[in-house]
Each structure stands twice: as C-alpha cells, then as structure tokens.
Image 1: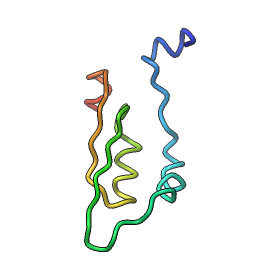
Image 2: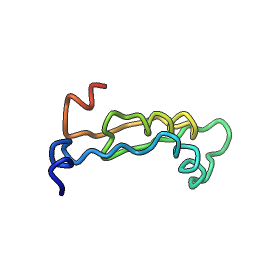
Image 3: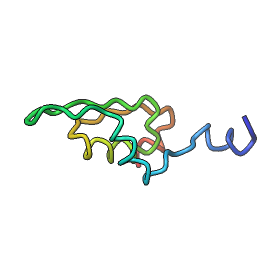
Image 4: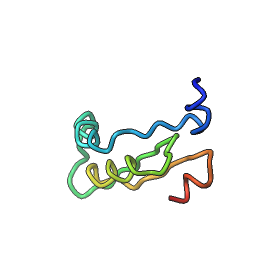
Length: 71
C-alpha cells in the first residue's frame, strides 16, 4: 500500500454518486418489507446510508477506526 493509503488507514470512500447505480444491482424487496444491509468496511457510513434509503433497508456497519465511525 502506498504511504498516503497507509496514512488514511486504507480508507478509500465509495463515490456517493454511484449509490443509485449500485442499488440497481440488487433485487427489490416485496412491498411492505424492510431489508438489512451490512457494510463490513463502513468508513463514515455515507454509502451504507444512501443505499439503505434507496433499498428500504436497516443499515449496519463495521469500522476499525472509531473516529471515522463516529461521523
């Protein structure tokens, strides 16, 4: 990993403008149901939050760095 990547703890945020395109890869849930979305490397949780809203899912995330998870 490059020095800049090590400095960021390997954090490369997923581009928020890609949320809708990513959401289109999932099969929609039946009406009236709510899914669950787990992001195993959530970072600041921005993409999980966006996808959760688009897919009607409860979101859960894991992040190694507490300062990033607090955002």
